[in-house]
Amino acid sequence: MGDPKKPRRSYDTPSHPWQGERIKAEHELVRTYGLKNKREFWKAQTMLRSLRGQSRELQARLRAGEHQASIETEKLLSKCARLGLLPMDGSTLDDVLTLNEEKILDRRLQTLVVVKNLANTHKQARQMIVHGHIFMDDRRVTVPSYIVKRGEESSIEYNPSSPFTDDLHPMRNLGNNGRSAPVPEPIEEVVAEADGKKEE
Image 1 (cartoon, rainbow, N blue to C red):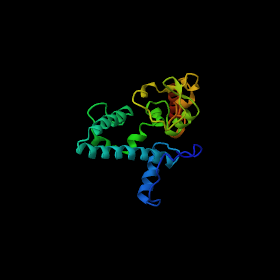
Image 2 (cartoon, rainbow, N blue to C red; image 1 turned 60 degrees about the horizontal axis):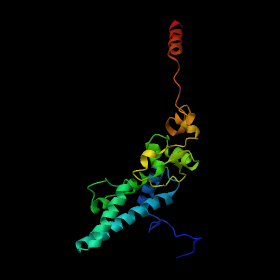
Image 3 (cartoon, helix red, strand yellow; image 1 turned 180 degrees about the vertical axis):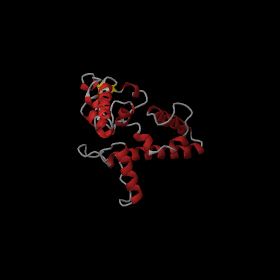
Image 4 (cartoon, rainbow, N blue to C red; image 1 turned 30 degrees about the vertical axis):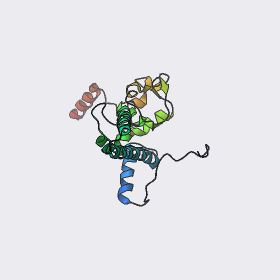
């Protein structure tokens, strides 16, 4: 069973530590999804590897005519559909094999907060979640890597007591890279300044 104070690691590290193309791809995904470190990517990769492994095993058992395999296949496809990784109907085990890491990362709470326009960047979304500004199913969720189920996605919102519920909050009107968007000058002042230059 193991020591409860030392839980098993929930991810597998790469078999070879120095592979340039893999390292470059990992860095790109970490930057794109605003991950804290590569461990969060490896967790998604491990989850994907587990789903693919189950799919390959079930395909072999189905070819052998095992009845229990068909029951487990329905459960696996239902699980993937609940997580939003596959459509609700018409999915097969081959569809599970076509999944990639981006599909898993797209279902993280941090990513969906950005998709729902509750945050401007992935880093801002992470900070908001950790600081308790995000509610889901009327409860506070402070884990950015939480895999959001399909039925929970519509309930993602601001914490009712959060200052972000105010439409005039300055952090809700940011431009790129976390900088405030420039405020345009009044049209009357622009016209007056242009007329002054013409007279000169």
